[in-house]
Length: 287
Image (cartoon, rainbow, N blue to C red; front, side, top):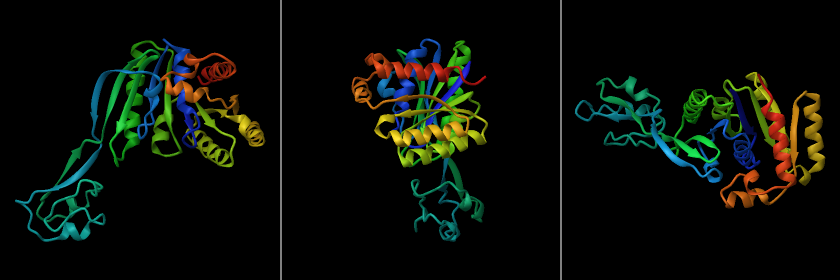
């Protein structure tokens, strides 16, 4: 089984549209994972039918036992998040779960309780099984949630003897991105021909390099800034990074999304040929 992650330095580069198309092109030999748990949207173009739903608990809140509390005020004074009011009620939204009050309370009146941080799901789609998640509002630990669903996807792929595990990674370079890159064979970095796009591309490639992940680059909407596209290509040549392909601007991406379909399932033509070429180049990378 080959584990492949598609990431980008910023949102809106067309990463998820490519993942949906890759899933359609590799069906039935793939399991797909939507690792962008803060804003999961792969389901918009894959038409999932829910099979399983699980709670995700990774955060904790302080709760004060008023029968034990001596009203000394130490917890209130020490809480830098001002989460404890004058009645010793802990605001679950303001509380960061740092445990400071738990250790400082002389009466052992503070209890740290796990809270529901989100849900994760297993769904069936016309393009393979999809493992996806929804992180709760203002919740943290998204890296842990990405790891949870990535491991589940790998488990399903191994059990089903699948050829590919395709992960739609989150944008940026933070903890969720690192979690989506862990243990994969290769990463496709989707960028666009802008100054910000080049800057973010360099940061993402640095993360891939740090964790020993083999990268390739896809330039989406390359014809909207051909001078910047040439700069990206030159940079990749100097760094010995594979250019998996370039995709011209086309409204068909939006039209396919409106119809709830991957691009390769919605239409045929030059754009689809480019996507097929990118998948052919990228799918053979890695071990």
